Length: 78
Ligand SMILES: [Zn+2]
Image (tube, rainbow, N blue to C red):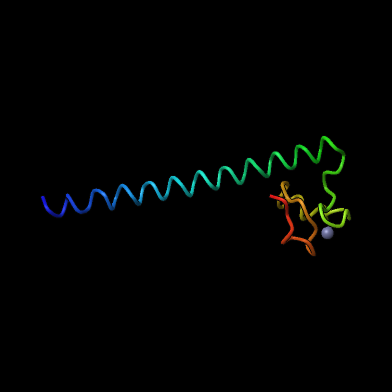
C-alpha cells in the first residue's frame, strides 16, 4: 500500500507533465498556422518575416508554416 500511495502522485505528475507538453506543442502548432494564414491573407506568405526575401520552395515544402529564410530562422515569429 505504501508503494502505491507513493507511486500514484508521481504517476499523476508525469501524466500531467506529458499533457502540458502536448498542449504547449499543439499551441505552438496553432500559432504557426495562424501566422501562416495571416501571411497568406496579407499576400506575404513565403516571404521571410525579417528580410522579406522569398523563402526557398524546398524549405516551405518541408515546413509549410515556416516564417523566415534560413538566415533569419532564429527570428521566426512562431
Ligand atoms: Zn530573412
